[in-house]
Amino acid sequence: MVDLLEPHAAEVFTFSSSEYDLTRQSNVARMYADQRPDIVIHLAARVGGIGANRANPGSFFYENAIMGIEVMEQARHHNVSKLVQVGTVCAYPKFAPIPFSEDDLWQGYPEETNAPYGLAKKMLLVQAQAYRQQYGFNSVVLFPVNLYGPRDNFDLHTSHVIPALVRKCVEARERGDRQIVVWGDGSPTREFLHARDAAEGIVTAAERYDKSEPVNLGAGFEIRIRDLVPLVARLCRFEAEIVWDVSKPNGQPRRMLDTSRALREFGWRARIPFEEGLRETVEWFEKNRA
Image (tube, rainbow, N blue to C red; front, side, top):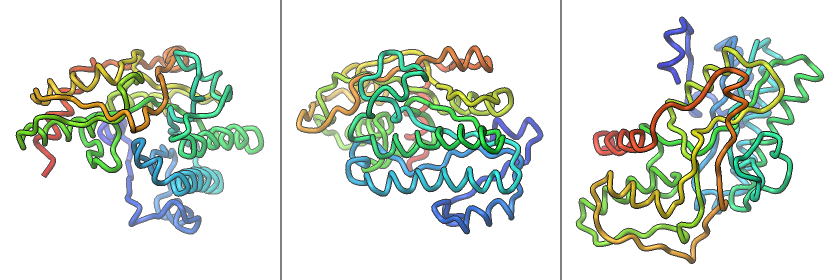
């Protein structure tokens, strides 16, 4: 994201939670007073895979909701010209029609293991639309699908499916293990968007989009987990057995976004081929995991 913004002659400021704890109103207000941003892209989240969501439903709901609420509330008090709020595909109903259209966001309850996180993020869409209506505050909300790529979180306790698989396969290969264990039965489908494509979509929306309607960011395809796992294993040069632990949850049955609004409204579409992006992710992990 920073790499994409700096060529636009933007002065970019990022920070960690140790500098400003966004769950605390005083910290959020201090951040705005210190940095005086003109445009805010809110990417902060407490997030993880199925296991992390099951273990932390309360904290995932509270921290994601309160961060977004305070970042937006303080933005309007500090005369920010535009806020880009990044949501999550987990906000969609569990059985939304494929491909997920932005118009279907309210047509049912999210998949149960992701619901607290997804609903916390979806409330920020309500806030953004309400603030535009009452205060004329320019905030836009984007809903990216599952992301992956270099610099991902590869912690097996909190990571999503692709970084978890990459780490499992690479480490199993190095140990000489004869198998890896994967959660579920492999039947769900997922859509994956490279982080660099997502960053370009977010920056493009920041430049060109100024409406209340939410916008999906996706790659325009879906792949079964049962097909994803051997693909990742091949790219990691792991050739042993894959064992499916059907006692563990599958998560949402299918995920794939309709991205026509992003193309129509601000001319964005994903460009990075999936296998190419996976190969780049594996290579980055093998070089940088230390």
